[in-house]
Length: 416
Image 1 (tube, rainbow, N blue to C red):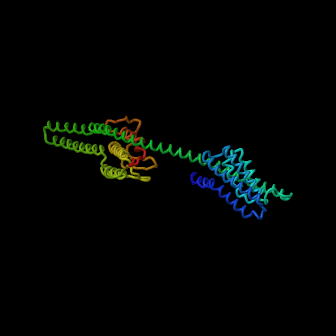
Image 2: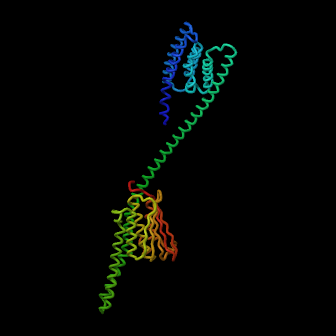
Image 3: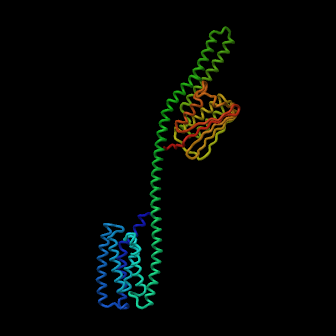
C-alpha cells in the first residue's frame, strides 16, 4: 500500500472523527442523564460546553488547513478541547466518548515534548470516567482511580512506543524507497547511455568497416589475384617462346591451374566482402553453412555447435563474427592443414563468444608479424574487427598442437 493510500483514511478520520465522537458523547450523555443524576443546571452547562466544542472544532479544522502538523496553535486547541472534555466527563462520565479524541490526536497536534503530558491529561479524564465519574468518593474509589490511571498510562506508553517504532520504520522505508527510486533512475540513465554508446559504436564500426573492406580487398588482390595473373602471364610468355608442343602444353596447364586458382580467390574475396548469407539466415545458420562448406572444400572434419539461449543479434555484430570465422577458417586451410576443426558460438548473458579450434600445424603467435605477406588480413584484421564493436580476440597456438581463436563481443540485439 502506498503512502497516499495510507494517508487517505487517516485524513478522513482526522476530519470527521472528532465530530462523530462528540455526537456519540452527546447521545450517550442524553440517554444517561437521569441515571447519573444530572440536574437542569448541569444539563444547561453541558449544552453550552457542547456548543463551545462545536465552535472549537470548526476553528480547529480551519487552523489545520492553514498549518498542518504540530504547532503552538494546535497545542492551545488541544488543551482547550481537553478542558472541555474533562469538565463534560465530570458532569457525565459518558462524555468520555468526546474526551478520547485526545489519545489519537496528541501525536499529530502537539510538539514532541508535549505529547506525553497531553496523553497523561487524557488518561486522567478517561480514568475518571471509567470509575463512574469524578471526583472519586471514598478511599476505595480513589484507589480504583489511581489503579485505572496506572493501567491507562501503561497502555498509553506501550501504544505510544509502538506508534513511534512504526513511524521510524515508515521513515526508514520511505528513505529506502526514495533511494531505490534514485538508484533505478540512475541505472536507467546508465542503460540508456550504454544503448546510445552501443548504437554509436556500431555506426562507427560500420563506417570503419567500409574502409577496412577496401583495404582488405586491395590486400587480397595484391596477395592472390595480382600474383596469380603475374604467374599466368609468365606461363604464357613461356608458351609463346616454346619450341616444342609438349613444353607449351605443360605451361598452358600451369596457366590454366593458376587461372582457376585466381578465380576461386576472387570468389572468396567477394564472398568475404559482403556476407550475403546473413541476408537470409541468422548468424547460427550462416555459420553452420559456412563451416559445412569449408569442410566439404577441404575434406577435413568440421563441426559447429551453439550453446546458450540464441538471440537475434544486431547486423553489424553478426557480420563481424561471420567474417572472423571465415578468415579463421581460411587461415586454417592455407597454413595449418588440419584434419578436424570445431567452431562454437556461445551466448553468455550480455556477451557472445566465437571459438574456432583446429588440430593443424599450429604456430608461435609471438613470432607472427602483425600482417603477414601471404595472409591477407590475418590475425590483425580479425582483432581489429572485434575491437571495433568493443570486443576482443585472443589466439592460442603452439607448433604441432593446433590453434584456438576466440572472439568475445558484446551481445547487442537486432532491435537496438
